[in-house]
Length: 483
Image (cartoon, rainbow, N blue to C red):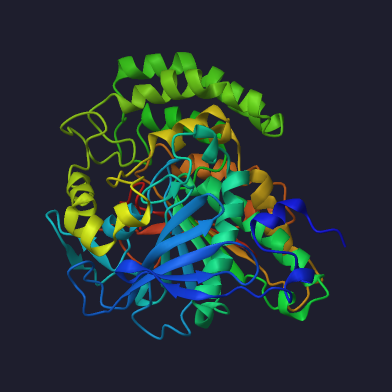
């Protein structure tokens, strides 16, 4: 069986695995341990922190920081072990959106074990997902957060499409399993929000292809190295631009769900109406064109600048329509600045994480979002490329009647805060309806059922519908960062 050339990014050929065994562990200055891969020239650097070390992260469990060295790209990660039954708890990877967002935002502002205290430290989060999950907060694509590339002055060294960065993510998982073999058999769940709706299906598709290749390999060790992917969990995901862009007008210019007033003023709605149909048309051309980079780069000016720009230039949040009269456009979350100050402080950057030393001086501060990665993903057309093909692959994979012992169903959970506008509930639902998979009819026919709790306003907490393999949950009184 021919070895796919792209898999050389992930691991050396299984047929070569028993030759020069690498796997040498060394210790570098500052306490970072370097584990060289047994299967490739890649490596991973790890520094560990005890549960008692609350100065860096008051999270209540052991945690680890480091970089996965994948060729000339280096992905930063922050791994928090579960507070309970860590050896049996599932393993989760959390990805931020953007494109270009650092996953440390999710760790310190949303669902991590320690949350930014708005000053120069962190507070224990009793509601963290690490109560029941081992969670890796991964800065990807290379270039976001504390991740970096060797040739940082060369734009071409950075990823520009999900098809590229997905391979780095799979390589990261393999390196992580080598560094933490005690978690290699734990079920893996890919999670994230917003633009992670592009990242996650792409990574899942690459993992399935990787596993299928290994399952047919003659080497038993290679077969045993399959990645135990179990589910995708996507919050307010960006999955189908044509449907989601047009729905922004619908949910913003009219009363919404009998509880929200129009988000935009009438004059802004007039401006949006003049653009929305043309924006939808060029986004749909990208989808029909099978994600052709030239076609998919066309919506940038029309959709991003002229249409989404209308929503961005008002003092209310298109991430949470309940936030109004903000200090300025795109300034409805001022406490995020304090989080950035904490991560960029000398104490964290230099003393604890040793970022300048470990990155060779390439990272001098933490930025919540990389403008370079954002620009490259827009210019390549990735932003307007739907995730429908990859989601279909994952959903149909789970429907296969015959699977080996190494091929397991992969469930998909999509959850949406109904106060979000940019990735609103109506657009997400319509996007899911575009997936022509084996369960499409049953998903459409599935009834909505109320969630068994009430919201902060005393109304029903939301609703859900599901069929085998796919769940959709709408959560009331929640916005873009529902988790």
